[in-house]
Amino acid sequence: MLPRAAWSLLMRTGGLGTRGTHSPGGTAGSQRKRISPYVDCYAQRSYPMPDEPFCTELTEEQRALKEKEKGSWAQLSQAEKVALYRLQFHETFAEMNHRSNQWKTVMGCVFFFIGFTALVIWWQRVYVFPEKVVTLTDERKAQQLQRLLDMKSNPIQGLAAHWDYEKKEWKK
Image (cartoon, rainbow, N blue to C red; front, side, top):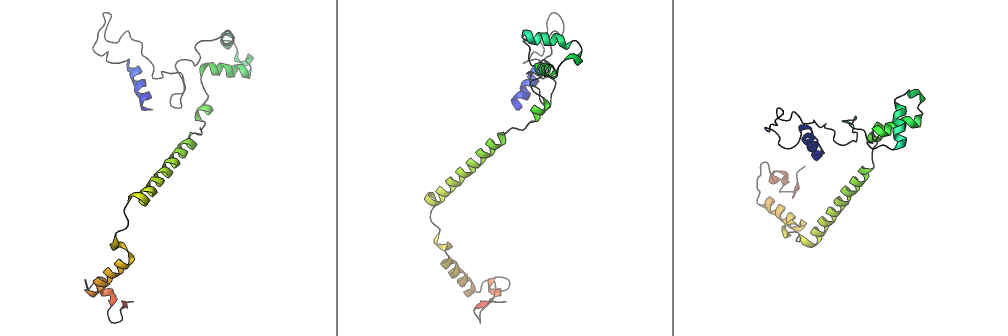
């Protein structure tokens, strides 16, 4: 999107760095043709009317249809009207707004990479990371809690305040 917008701006302003050059015929850029922001001939929702028709090189049949277009449109059949529309525009608004199935591909890629990342994390936990530290086992945690209770640490608001030392159980 950004390169297309940059190219469009470049074409609208007339190219790279012609500022300050003067021709014998007048001021800078007076003889240059201003190029439209619509460089290609594909309509978009934001710019639906191209400056140039979609088909510029016409066959004999298409030229005859263009001549017939100059007359009454009541004499044109529906197929001829559609053919004239297709000469001017690449696609209709309905075709422009039609959703594609590209979201399925994007979501498939996203889920693939999420799954691959999960496999890498599992492999690291199994084969790369070290075993748990001994101090994190349940037995060591119980010993550490008992040591804090034996030392009567923080007897007013801490663990010792909630421990009944006579009954050897937590206060209710």
